Image (tube, rainbow, N blue to C red; front, side, top):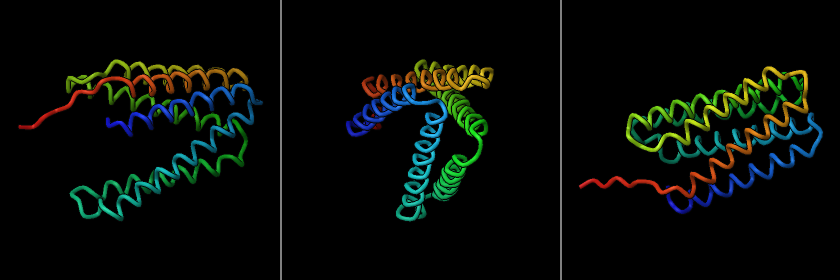
Length: 177
């Protein structure tokens, strides 16, 4: 990871910490609405960025169509998340918990792949396990919206701290001779 990537990870981690603290101070219904709007905006921006990347560079590359498909799927998820803000909060909560659990599963799979390749993997594995535990705990406490917000914010704080820590970790560089 380059210096710009490290700065971006620290900045995103600080924003995640601030967002989780703001969500803890708000009413629980408003907190989940803010989380859904930020998630949908992030998905929309990522989808548009991937589509722009495809149309400018990746369409001329081997395997470039994958960028098109991923960009379209991420853009669709962003639009879908934006529409969830108008329906009852229970569906929104379940959707956010599903994305949290899915992200945790992806982190665990990436950690296992990193372990096979001999790279650092323990931090990613712990992040994935914590995300899945937070999603399961939230699933069992659906009747208390305040407890859901607290658990979700704790998971968000942990993810932000892991992002900041990983920005300051040394990365190994592979040299090809």
